[in-house]
Image (cartoon, rainbow, N blue to C red; front, side, top):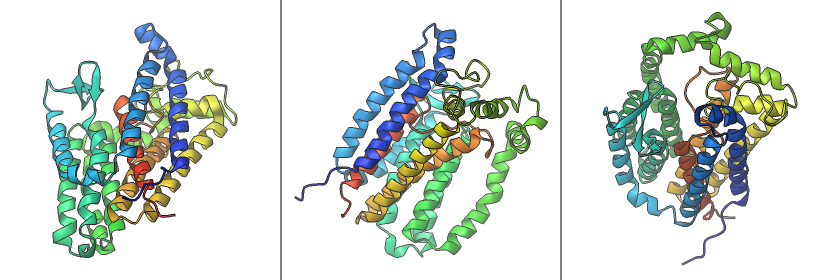
Amino acid sequence: MQERKLPDFFLLTITFVLTCFGLVAVYSASFAISFERYHDASYFFTRQLMWAILGFIALLITMNIPYKFLRKLSPLMFFVTLFLLVIVLIPGIGVERNFAQRWIGFGPILIQPSELLKVVISIYFAHYLSKRLDRMDEFKETVQPILIMLAICFGLIMLQPDFSTAVIIAIITFTLLFSAGARIKHLFLVGVAMLPLVIIMAIWKPYRIKRLMTFLDPWAADSLKEGYQIIHSLYAFGNGGISGVGFGAGLQKLFYLPEPHTDFIFSIIGEELGLIGAISIILLFALFLWRGLLISSKVEDPFGSLLALSLTVMISVQAFMNIAITIGMLPVTGLTLPFISYGGSSLLVTLIATGIILNISRDVSK
């Protein structure tokens, strides 16, 4: 058996830097809330550190167990994850927070099945399509089954509801179909057919309409209600200026900006480290995207190529969507910043996905 190469050191370094920076950012963004809620300034930091350690153990495991082994498990993983998406909706089993029922509780530990789905759907769809690369022009035989499975997953996630995650899995799926060689005409027609449905889902609930109107003009809405979060996010960036107010010295995390350590942690980074710090984080994610795409383009195994692509897109799209939300370029929705935001399931799944990409990089032809 041919000895495998070392994993991509550049991608591993980016991952380590982003995760370590995330721990520091979580502490800075959460110490006031931690002390106010739990009388412990490091409450959220300690838990994020625990998840980071667990995540890097998982990364080391997925980085060293040959990724092709995942092909055999992919159907089972997919259907188990679908089962979890169903039971999370059952009252008494699913845990509800902020009017969303997305978690399953195991004592103090909360698991979010939709986070797991993003990785599992990448593995299963990459496996499915890599066996049918010579039949991608057959819509009913190859593309249609993928779209049916996507529709089931999309519907289950929307019942939680979690619109942003549903959009991400749709982007992953269409990226895989396009890269595997599906006909542009088929994808375009499906996209056109889905557009009215997506629009209806986006405006079906009154709060989504309010979010859309707030996105169009935050100050036109009630600045103490719908527009409050994005307005204070923009205040944070404005206060930060070029070089920031200094680490730990931000004001918006002091009970002004809701969720400063989760969905809006990038706003705190912008306030405390300024434009320079914010651009540095964006560049790190851009380098992550470039390295992941490079690995995908160089690996000879079709399954590995599609899997590296989908996982890279998963992490990068979520990162840039989160950043776009905090600066007012997308409507506000619950979405964490990969590697950086507080959240155990998100960090663990992101590090597992990165471990798989690093595993695939060991088979890249030089």
